[in-house]
Image (cartoon, rainbow, N blue to C red):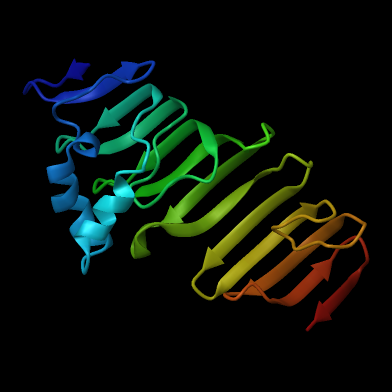
Length: 200
């Protein structure tokens, strides 16, 4: 544990990281005050129920701001965000806003079947951290870049057959761009490998 000049814990290093008296993530009273009333303001007790199932540990390094909130994590098996459980185990680097909301990261996600994908992402700070710009190379070799907002998602790259991001259900690789509305319905595409444009 590395302290600042005022005696506050600011950097935690370990395998796993050590307990810190100043870290908000492991102080449920402060979590309820700082996170619950913001994330689920109408039912903070429900948030605390969800929160009890989140992982708060990490193997590596966690940097806290002067209020005890995680702002950077680096290493293996990083903590869940304060808004929900991760779908994958992540090794790499993640960064949060000063209020603890995760805003991005880069690293390797390991799936339940043991396969890995390299990804990066930037989240939208204007709406509490929804996905905004993400990209990576998937375990099947697909390469993708996704731009998202609350109206839909724009996906570009090279999607192998049965790729979930491109919704590519045919037997050939999709090379090009697709736009999906907020319900996930494809409304436009440009296939570079077929030299055509479709609107549906």
